[in-house]
Length: 149
Length: 149
DNA sequence: TATATTCCCAGTAAGCCGATAGGAATTGTG
DNA sequence: CACAATTCCTATCGGCTTACTGGGAATATA
Image 1 (spheres, helix red, strand yellow):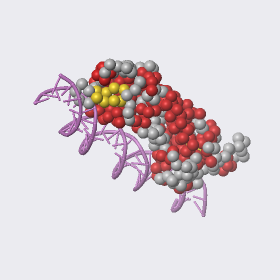
Image 2 (spheres, rainbow over the protein chains, first blue to last red; image 1 turned 45 degrees about the vertical axis):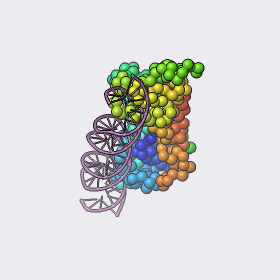
Image 3 (cartoon, protein in one colour; image 1 turned 90 degrees about the horizontal axis):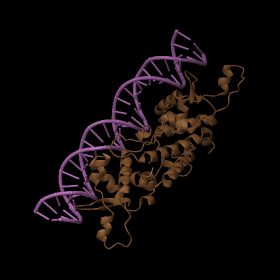
Image 4 (cartoon, rainbow over the protein chains, first blue to last red; image 1 turned 90 degrees about the vertical axis):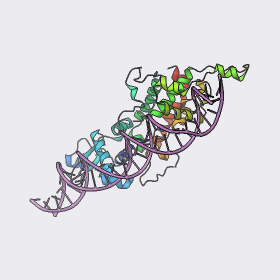
């Protein structure tokens, strides 16, 4: 029950990997070159190797994380990925949202009390409570909490 | 994300239906006949009709709920289902467990810190925390809470 | 016996999921 | 410029689950 797709687990493992090699870029660096040098990028292939994830599959996941603004990609040779901001500012709720969309136990979370189906929709509040419990936990944890665990 | 299967939603709706027509059987009744008369049974077909659920599909779900001891079935003509105990004693965690098994976000909830895969398993504690949050909510709610919502 | 109901088993159509394949676009390097 | 390494895009595939259906057997009432 409530099993998390492999895709999401992979995405989090990848972010954890990037977070562990994250170093803060000094605000007043000499040049962009050095700034990028200070914040090393990691290739998708390397993450896939050390995390034992299917390389091609991971590629798509990283593109998705980039689209959500959680990671930054450097294309071309010597390219790779890095975290877009410090791990302590990345809430796990953002990560889950990027990989799977909104937490929605049932379809009728946004509609009012009346179900499309015939019966009464008494359980709706129960599901909303579950959503709140999950969202509360996820937004209370950051990537930093995960790597410090 | 974390969408709940239709099967589980149906099962809960069925239990809600039974709970609303639940009346406590007096302990010292004159006979078993009257006791059964007091605790009316509802047929699977009627639940399916008023809740707009596929009748044949619901049958299987009710058998499952019976196997878990949450409902009692009376077979044969004039048969049907009733709750096995008062709604306030049925925790929603029991309901979910009956319909879907244990809450298990990831497969490695029971194993120790080492993952079968190559990489480190730092996120494990994070998932265990999520499991605890979900389990905590589910076991804090009873069927009574749902129908009183 | 007839009827209404639970119960069991098997099958099916559709969708999701993890993974793979091939290659285009981009960028540093000699 | 040519090459290599890397991100990025699109399409596809096999396996699994899910919701649902069908056909009946077992059971109980009248």
